Length: 234
Image 1: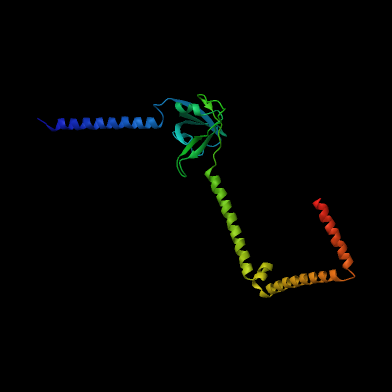
Image 2 (image 1 turned 90 degrees about the vertical axis):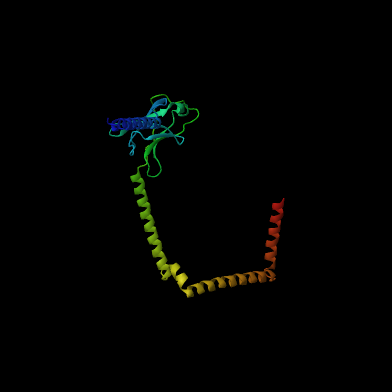
């Protein structure tokens, strides 16, 4: 009697049972992620460009995954319609003035839809309702903007290096002021002369006040100043 055949049948049965169990678990996990077993409702929106969004990508509200992208369809040359299925339990929090945008999972992750929070006074969305959208910023546009900024920074750096080189070599007024000690000494001497001139002028004014020919004039001015001060006090 062949004893290997019953063992083979047992192994085959265990393999099939294990495969079916894994299949059921996979269906359950995928269905849970895609909201196949939860009550859902539908929302829709339109974009000029979906920027790499795909069917099955997540839909987020307040930073929480609440649904998935159900369908993407090109309406015309400037409009792409995106349908979403969202958990029924969050319908009460999504308002008619909420906007739909396209984001990503991290810097280089998959694309996803984000629903912004609406105002408190707005009405609750209905099943199948269309929400306004915000066009995504394309990665190519960001890279182009960064290239322009880098080019401008390079130009500015080159100009600063050129100015510094000229100053270090004594070119231009600022360069001569820094490098030529004679000019610096002349400036110091000019300032010193101005100080002396100001001091001499003060001395001359003081001497004029005591001159008997001009004493009356200065006394008159002093009295007028005192009268103005008294008038201001009143």
